[in-house]
Image (cartoon, rainbow, N blue to C red):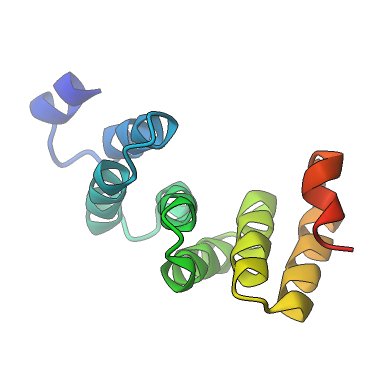
Amino acid sequence: MSKAIELVPKFWQPYINRGGTYILLKQYSKAIEDLSKAIELNPKAELAYTNRGDAYLLLKQYQEAINDLSKAIELNPKNQLAYAKRAKAYKSLEKQDLAKKDMDKALSLGFKPSKEFLSQYK
């Protein structure tokens, strides 16, 4: 992925791919950097907002996560993962009603959480 970025630095997709890899490696700041670059290059890159929201969520920067996940939902109202992750951010901020509303929406769109994940929203 780094080679792809080196060869074509204005192409946004490799930044999303590398950002996702950084999340898996728990290098959240690096992920945010790459995903921000992807958004700079393509402001309609829904997956970049979803993944950057996830990185913020993992850093416990809940309002930033909500902002990005809301943008992802604005770009694609059927983004079940963005609703589920935003529900988690709202729950972390003790906004139970908003968390439940988002989780219900994610489920209605086909999100398949683990039983443990789902039990947090009852």
